[in-house]
Length: 151
Image 1: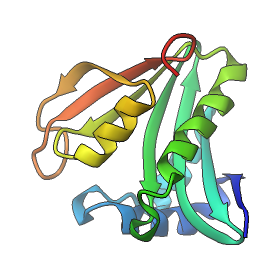
Image 2 (image 1 turned 180 degrees about the vertical axis):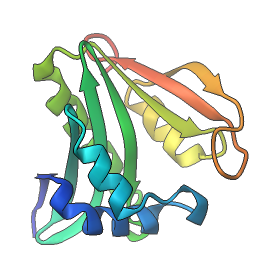
Image 3 (image 1 turned 90 degrees about the vertical axis):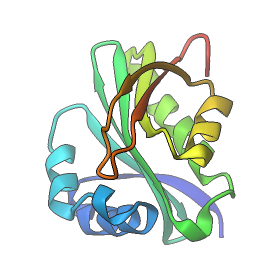
Image 4 (image 1 turned 45 degrees about the horizontal axis):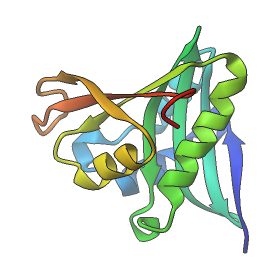
């Protein structure tokens, strides 16, 4: 089967919530209702990477003026280290660029070394911190990439 990026709307909230639940610890999981509410906000988009009809992961982002924010990237545990996360970041950048986005931001848990390595490899750099941001008390590192320079 071939992999494809597929836009997902609020009607896919159950599928996206299941992906999120597989990817994150219990305290950090987003409900279907929360995902549907986010997708109802103008400028918010979800892109899912599917292998045939099987969803492997998704990225949710929002765009406002010349900035974008990756709200979450969720990759099934069984699909990690297979290029899904990198493909989702590239898809987010490609989707944001036509809107005039110059900078893309995201938060990542300080203790999520695999995600931090992925983001560093795709051009993100630390620009701030949020103390005790996550349910487990971990700090969040605020990362930014300039679409013109970094990615």
